[in-house]
Amino acid sequence: MDKIIMNNIKQMVNNLTPLLSINKENRALLGRNNNMKIIRFFVLSLFSIPFFTYANIYLYSGFLGKNKISFYIDLNNNLDINAIYVYEKYHTPISLNVIKMNKQWYFYELNNDGTNKAVINFNNLIFDEESLALKSLVLDGVWQDLTTDKTIKIHLAKKQEIKLDENAEYKSVELLQSNSLDDVYFSTLVSKNQKHPPVITGINIYDKKSNILIQQIDGLHYDFNNFYNIEIEDYNFDGVMDFSVYKSNGSLFNKEYVYYINEGKHSQFKKLNLFGYNFSFDDKNKTAVSEKNCIEDKTTGRIITLIKITYSYINNEYKKSTSSCNVYNENNNSNLKCSTEIWQWCSQY
Image 1: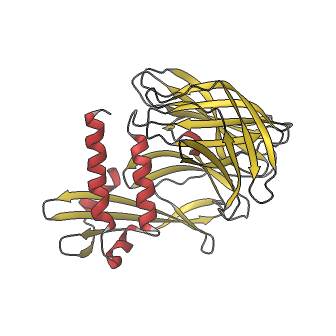
Image 2: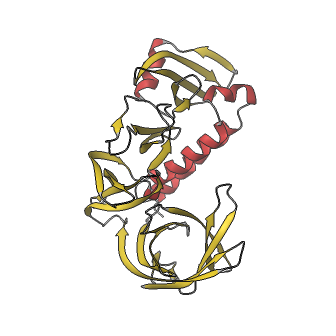
Image 3: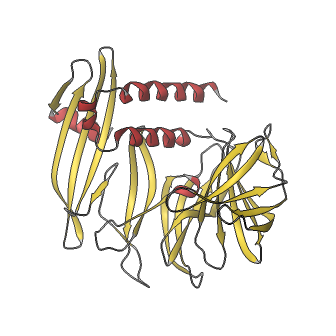
């Protein structure tokens, strides 16, 4: 791996470790679920380093029993595999938890409570660790229900490979997303120029029942996050699930999404007027809170600035209601309001 990349990773690890050790009282400055939030940002930041993973994504198609399926495998040079598959009759993606044991890869399908529901085992999955590539043109294996021990044969053939190495170049390649709604599913349009990381340039939204394209969102330039650019949540508190698309890691601790609300069957998704980072949504108070963290390394310790902006959902749109800015000094444990200069600096950070 390139020395510059390794140095960047070491620096991020150094930035992460002291932050996790902040005492309990002052860690609250960074918002809710802090440790998990910080770790997720750290992992996503690693993936945002150009060419860090050298991942290739492989699409196989074939049959699970008599049912036609598509099977997506994302392989990277950490020797990790992410995978999803979908029954083409239903168009509801199924995420898999992939584990390697005794040189064998096991693809676990999960229940809603996170327990293992079924496992898929391929007997001819060939992974070349030197070239970081899947060599199998055909995959044969078995799907096994872990409750009943029922087994079903799987036969798949390689259909497509999306290359993500630095020399790859292409435009608007579709990639299925792991999250979907009851009636629609999503795919991102991935483009890549040589010597540059892949980016998301559009989103296709399909009706599950008819498999017809019902909406296309284009003109984007968002960070690529393989199968996981789309998140699902109710963002306007009407009881109907909406979606958001991962846009970027503004920095190690700041994650940015763009939000769209579901206006009903046969309607287009509408973009929300929300701008900020690390949003949390409060159904009870009908608010969305943005929290932006700015971290400075000083010889005397770290200085952590938090800008918090609260938006209230009123008359079908978000309106800014309150904002605050605080600075925590690690050296003397002080927690003070920001000066105008610090507030402006962190806003542009």
